[in-house]
Image (tube, rainbow, N blue to C red; front, side, top):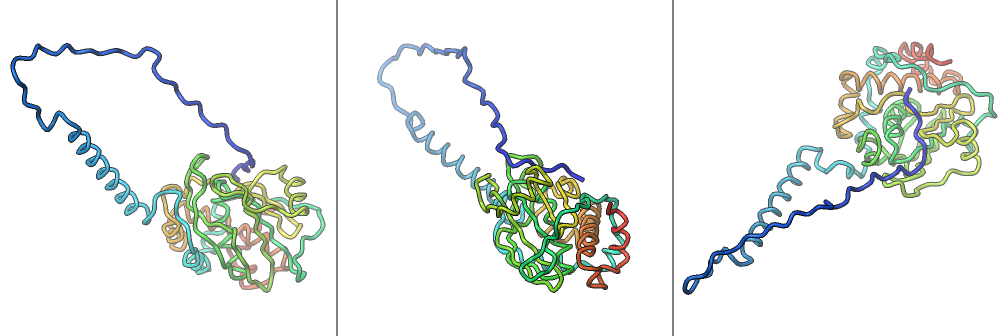
Length: 299
């Protein structure tokens, strides 16, 4: 289990000042003899040409970076995430069974609070996080896989975590505009700040009370129908480094290495926890070998 993330502004690094001992350099020119002819290279032209060349180099570097980073520079991926979510929802049940808990342990614990229900009486899964938070970035991947087994996520956007935090620019999803269709559970998401740490969405009084009571304000925070809570992410975000959202989704769906083991293992653990809130429904999901194996990790 990864550590939770406090919602606070980090201290900015100090900037070094100018050199307190500047060195003065002078060069005495030789005496002039007769009329001099001024070269075109002695005027402003060399400076103009140098600046133009520098501009071309910068433009070339930006184009190269975009072409080698999924089409956009780090931190700027945004837009519709439906194709990525479709990949996550299409993970093979056989692959999930093979992964099981994936070597992860449960990041959630049982609580004795009142039941958390949606307007329709279904068990409610509450997520509170922030877009800048790298641990939230990791958690959303497993949560999206788990929720896709009980219903359909819509309105998910692509984004990256903050550039000034641990595991900077981690490719992830945003739940700011999410909606969820399910016959089994209700999903509510609150993203409290954007990737620049500016206020985004505010928890309700009840949600803030749950956050303060069970996590002391740490994010990501999950409340699973008032039966279990989770503080922090289920795995370290470093396995997601230097990848785009599509690359991560492809690795997950193919079971590629440590990344898939971490994301899918934690997704199975989350699924097992959700199954406890739905009385084991749907049976095809809750009765699967991978979920049963992951259920052994719940304490």
